[in-house]
Picture 1 (tube, rainbow, N blue to C red):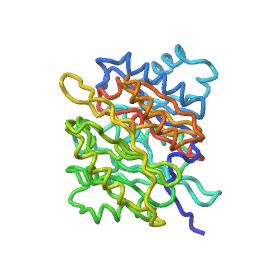
Picture 2: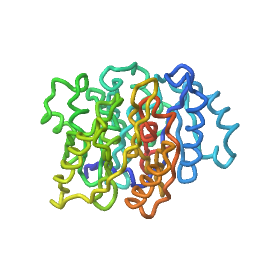
Picture 3: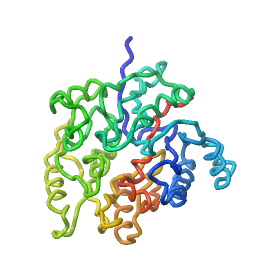
Picture 4: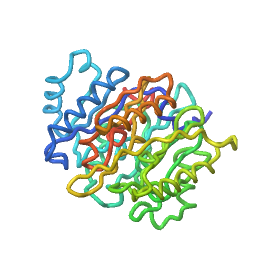
Length: 348
């Protein structure tokens, strides 16, 4: 019998989270110490629940940093591999892993092309990180070369039941997969991701976002037919009208059962600027792991608390963990952007 594959929801069982470690040759150089502190916090949080796989430009140096910061029991759940890298956004250059329906079959890694969010930044090394890890026997998966198609992990959300949520502003943006039309891109997503339905969102692009509107910054899928989405409560904010249009569009979306989604609104952080540029701070960029959700916080106690509580409503049986993401957003991403989950059965 031919093996069937399925793209799992992020809240399904995982083997590990992949990170790509920052170093002085990346854009993190001006605040390298601060971002390493954030990464250490992430590793400490994740390893309470599952393993961490790290791609690092200098594996020996990274191991030394980890050894100075982590307990032996935590270190036992961390593996570091030498890789050539440009940057650290594992969500977008990491493997998209399909799970096999046949218990005797291996999961399958889909290695899509990463091109720096439409040739905005250098990407030659990042585009090969998944293959570099695969060649070092990190994964117990079959391999599928999809590098003829540009797809970033942050640009898709999945419910594990055949529905993919994405944003038209990203997947139709220049320098991705032109000259393919929206209909042709939808066909490719269904074919490659074994999907039955593609839901397109047309609003919600944040100021300062380099990704052309990744779905994981604006709308996230959660169990029990739930969507968490960002809102804005200030009519004077430049993002107010677009986020209101987003909310109105989400009210029209239907699941495979034709029922509307349960909608849980997340607040927007008060605007955060760096050198006069607004940064794309968002609470939607949370990380789901085995038994916990790691939520970005922004040193705004009231809004941080509201976001943590709302995400707790979507994941009532999970530990909800806040980690300060103020350094991460200086490079225009947040916590989910730094991570890529490896579903159960993916690691050697």
